[in-house]
Length: 220
Image 1 (cartoon, rainbow, N blue to C red):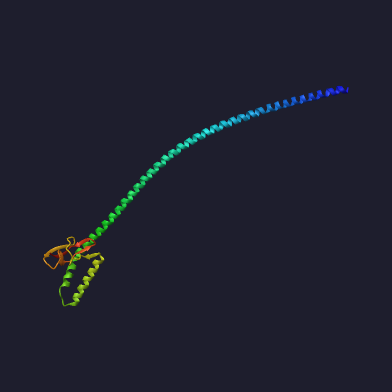
Image 2: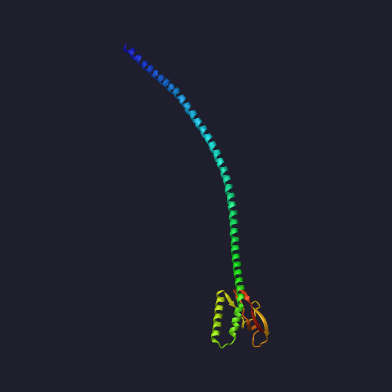
């Protein structure tokens, strides 16, 4: 009886192991079957995400391409603005140069006009100078009279000096047709050629502008 029980024990253990293996396989299949929908959903989600990424990349590519096109247009606009700016700057420099030339020309014209007016005014007073000079050359016993004339002449000369008027040097100088007016000629071996030996009327100038030529006698 005991031998029969010993013989049935291994068979029972083997049967139990087989049943456990089958049960595990069934559980694994059931778990796999349950996980299949989730895996399918995960795969679908992954495929959808990949498609979304591809679409986004394509869209970004279009945006990048559009951005490049916009940048090119902006560069053309910037280049055009720079060219316009260069043209305006050139026009500005030209206007400044023209204005500077106009200012200098106007200044010279004003100075020349002032010199002409001053010379014309001085010309009206020169006969007074000539009369004072003749009065001083005349001998007189009235010292008060002579001193008064000298004071007037000194004041007249001082006023002309303040106006920039200078006398033309003549006596003993060589005749210069740009400064002197020769009204007499004399031969004198003691004098040099074209030397001025006498001044009949004093000449004046303002700067380089002759107001009145000196009237002189020239030797040789």
